[in-house]
Length: 113
Length: 112
Image (cartoon, rainbow over all chains, first blue to last red; front, side):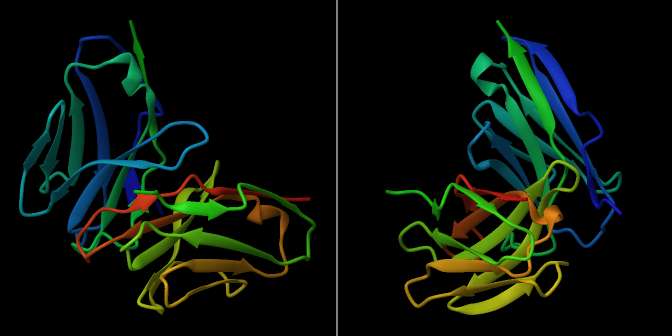
């Protein structure tokens, strides 16, 4: 049973537009949520995180929104750049230490110029 | 600052053998976690070590084990390899208890 789901395997966006990646979760005990980006042949790279006590966190072009009642979070990238093309993973943890992360299966983002 | 280093990058083993993978965390990081990535199951948590103690363990059989040394370096071992153990094994480290994980580039294990 998947506790973290990324229902869109892929997303294509034009350069300069907004990319919105979505993630749903089922475990109400999750307390900390993260987004990672992964290029081929490399390990995942941390992008941004959000605690369950917040509903929004921004870092430059990246914003994560959390809707606890809907058990849904999203990552907004504005503006999208070709270098953002990668696989994006949503992850969740039951503790603020962010250990024992539960990952979604990823969304492949393609940004065309 | 050097990142998380995993060795070797690639391994080919035969079913029934055992394998040991190594991970050197970022300097100053005391928590080390291991994850398995497969096309079917995605990224799955194996275990996490902090100050040489296993703090958390995922849902994997006992054939998967690990340890952490006093210098925070970690190893994971898989005994009696099965074809399904073919995967990318990722190590990640972090500093204090609420920092995000920093991943290495992984060890690609192929079991034939």
